[in-house]
Amino acid sequence: MAGISVSLDGANIQLSFQKDDQATAVVMDARAARALVRAVGQLLTAIDDTDEPDMADEMGDEEVAMLDVTSSAIEIGTDDEGQAEEWPAVPFVQLGLTAGQVEQIAEEEDEQQARLTTSRLLLDATVLSADRESAALFGRPTLPADEPFGQVFKRTVQEGETPDWLTSLAEQVTRAAQWTYPAVHWSLMRSANEYDHTWYSPVLTHVRRSPSKAMEFDIYFQRFAGPPGARSISLSLPDSAVQETDASGVSG
Image 1 (cartoon, rainbow, N blue to C red):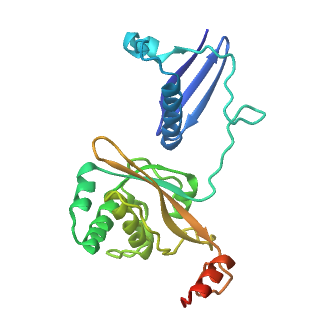
Image 2 (tube, rainbow, N blue to C red):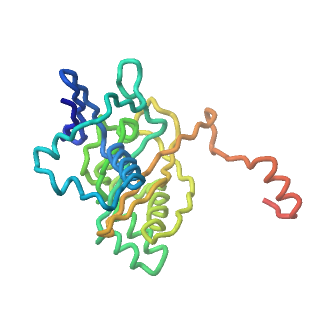
């Protein structure tokens, strides 16, 4: 017999593949599981036969828990030992705001007040997913799912202080909650790891809004490396942009 079973493994999701006497399991965090669901959904949409009844509606609970696999092999980016290989290039954290919290931001007519509201609400935003790099960034061994974001960096800032990087993130989340493209203003932060001398800045890269109007925000902390003793980090324009600026007579 061949089949697939799905179960919870702490805060992760485990897919178990079985064929005859051989079995293997893949453990994914919430972000990877959502990506898999979207990919499978797209494939099902491509092959969907509207005349065919919904198979899940005709199954019992035990049948849904173990679905037959027609393919004899499943290969998804595995190494020689059959294990998926991946590593985070930059720290990642996924935050969630409830529909009520999003509505508070969207209802603010004054842009500055909206950003202040977002800064406050981000303290209560739920950590939905995070990688080991983001845990190290905030001086934690792990970032437990469902923990308020404000608790994550509480020990790294003075009480009542709103760090510049959080203000920058609030600006991005505010615009996303208003369903407009965010603009990034680089506000740098240090890692809580005393041996990490790299600068970081939060960047909102992906936004999801559920039918209930709750929202999820994928945030990556981009690394910036500066020479020792540097007081600033600059981003140079490409030569083509400089030439266009000179030709238009606009001074920087």
